[in-house]
Amino acid sequence: METSDLTTQRSYEVRTHGCQMNVHDSERLAGLLEEAGYIPASSGTDADLVVFNTCAVRENADNKLYGNLGMLRPAKTRNPRMQIAVGGCLAQKDRDTVVKKAPWVDVVFGTHNIGSLPTLLERARHNDEAQVEILESLEAFPSTLPAKRESPYAGWVSISVGCNNTCTFCIVPALRGKEIDRRPADILAEVQALVDQGVLEVTLLGQNVNAYGASFADPELPRDRGAFASLLKACGAIDGLERVRFTSPHPAEFTDDVIEAMATTPNICPTLHMPLQSGSDRILKSMRRSYRQSKFLGIIDKVRLAMPDAAITTDIIVGFPGETEEDFEQTLEVMRRAKFANAYTFQYSKRPGTPAADMDDQVPKEVVQERYNRLIALQEEIVLDANRALIGTDVEILVATGEGRKNAATHRKSGRARDGRLVHFRAEEHQLAAIRPGDIVTTTITAAAPYHLIADAGVASHRRTSAGDAFERGTVPKTAPIGVGLGLPSVGAPAPLPETTGCTV
Image (cartoon, rainbow, N blue to C red; front, side, top):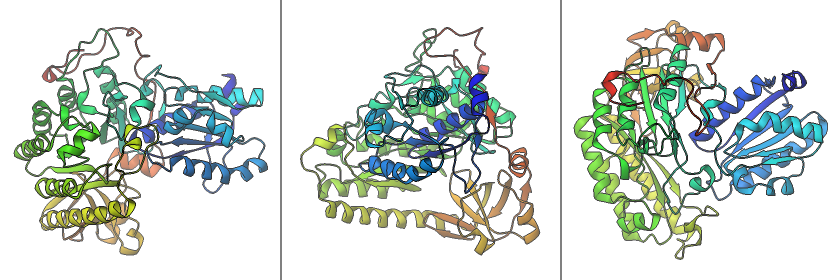
């Protein structure tokens, strides 16, 4: 291919900001660039191409981007071959503003056309001018693009794109579009492709995963509210897939069949991320969150009845416009009752372009900070109590890389338990030397902290895996395009799901 010839030996670096969606999109960008002839930049060197995959969720996201672009300007002056590309949600939102504020940027592309990046880069070189291409709707699922995965042992698999909710604090629907669901057979084919390359853990990814089945792009597939539970059960039939997670569901659409699928499918991990946002019914209504406190707590109770040891995590926004002390106390009360294993807590900040940004009664910064501090203190107390209760229990750990900043000093390694908790463990020196990221170990919890567990009792068992072999070789999975463009007819008959799932494909 001509583009490949022209870009041979051009090095690239992708810098990712924001959510798991962006992390997964960056894997697609890396796959596209390597297919076009680019090579990863060596550590400590200036890349010939730097791609920013941006986030627009935070109020100061644009300041962060333009600061980073400014720091790259001298490098571009030194290297005439260098190109800079900006994609993701902020690019979708700001469009031509990017090149007006940073005229040294070569390419701006949006969330709906990441597959255009190699062509836009070549066009920018040929025309010697910036290329800005922002599509208003998705042309193809990200799965129809090649991907270079970040991890040899864990992988993201997108089951849908976009969101049909209208939360007043969130700009995602405006930037990612309406929800569109992938064909189940395409999803399972991608999961199988990852497992065939040694991946042990897969996370099903969507803006609202449990709404899956309501918005199939393929007109031959009927609306199916039970599709997500069926998909979870289908994952249970994939030999070699040891752990399945998903993120993020929405409480308003969380149904009993999903709980049943989680409880009865052995490789579905006993963990659930269920965003609360606020414990106040009044604030939930102002947020346009279509559930109330009683429904949320009812879901938690049902999950705990079916899976007593499930680790339930959440998202909480502190200081949403109009939040009173009484509203905030309701959030604290839900935390006490739900006993979250972790809470990702955020101080409300204006998202330009969202209804909440223009609401009256913005809560003063000092009040938000004080409430935030109280929330964190309560959550740490709850988590520490729960973690201490695990002392003396046995745990299976998928060994990970980059999870323990102090491991060199403490002579430990780190990984995740099946319920998602972070565990730092110690073993004999010869054992530690043999344990690779991607391997599976079992040990016993000996101590607890709010954000991690300690296992210093020694390793009871160590299972070497093909994922560990891949890590040792320095290789990661690469997945070829899977599926077809949106609205296009399928090529051939779709592969059926296992009969036990009840899915119709």
